[in-house]
Length: 307
Image 1 (cartoon, rainbow, N blue to C red):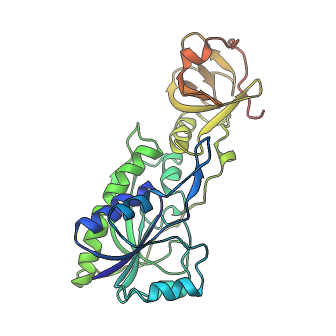
Image 2: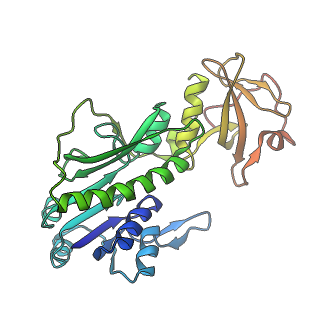
Image 3: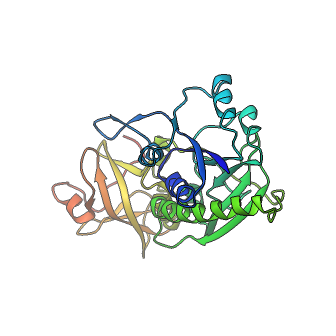
């Protein structure tokens, strides 16, 4: 009952934990290389590596998914390759290795939000429901046949971090159920049906607030962009992240400060957005009231979309 597990970030940790606790024979854990993190750019291992080492598992961190790597994976004689947010596309030779199937845990209800950032895109799009799909992997971008799906509500207060944590736990449960069902011949893969949508990787510059959009859309945008890359604006050349926001009653011109006493209300294309918590560059997150102290922000001032 051998498995090779591919995963990197915190999202993948519950899946690896569930496989280990269910007694699976995990022959190897493949993850990305250690990378710099935080302001100090300290080199840190991926969360999946840390957990795998705590279990005494064999960890592989390939620079390239080349022929030598494929040969190493072939030697594991695995039933399944299990992939959960590994962060790289597996070549066809690797996908053909397992005796039963390569299985992916994807954080959306496919074919909606194929790609690298399905959780953030679902929130930004204003979706009310999302979920987990376990699927057979092929060489396309999340185009393989569906095995199982589990839905969950996107709650009004969810951001990408809280939703990711919840989906990770659902994914772990669904993964164990999927492998058991496939071994027992109880799951019939089915083709993806319906209109596909795509969730390309997020970049730092994608977080720039567009005040011409409606307040509700900006509220969803802030939630979807947290914790990374973060929604932001510029004030007198200073880059300021928006950590939390809320839709407020009233009207105003896009980007114009409508109230700057104790609360920071900004005009949008439709309605007002209250900036509840912000983070000036190089500083800790703070309330709007704390941010306003020491800054000459008056009603009628403009929060810019550029430095």
